[in-house]
Length: 255
Image (tube, rainbow, N blue to C red; front, top):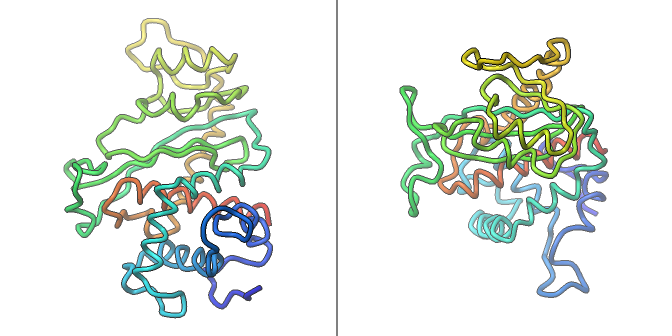
């Protein structure tokens, strides 16, 4: 097994967790991958540094080959499946959701197929990351939209099927649809009511302070430069980048 040569590369312990779930292994349908570990290290390097694919160090392989492989894994939802595998025994005593803008770099413009999740406001073009975390602040679900998309529109997709005891979110998520969805699973709502609600719903203000965990998780996501600033032209590529960052966070905890 190859020893990591750069600080961006995954450790032996992290590789041991990932390797059994990767495609291209002997005995599986299709061709055998040349070096899955080197490929993952290359992707981590690109996403962590925010460098263009063309600037990938040659020891990681040809940038075009690595990029095309990244696209194939994206389209086959391999990154998403890896994240699902690594989400190990999440603590759903609390489920917290939030969203955050990220600036879109000018080089991300120009893709075919619409605006690719790029909204525009007075600060320029931006996208938005929607995140759900468990009681320990570990990411469990992500979504990516245009920056002009309202936070509450993605909430049901983030919480659907999760039987949490408490749902924590800011006032922007105070909508009847979200509350009804949470009540379906007997989840207690910890969301400040909007001021225009006739009936001001009670919420646990002490527990609400724990919501900083989801804000911290978003900050951890943005430690990688390609998450803090979106360089990917395609919305699916940017979502894959966010999923890979979540994979890296889980690997750090699990190893």
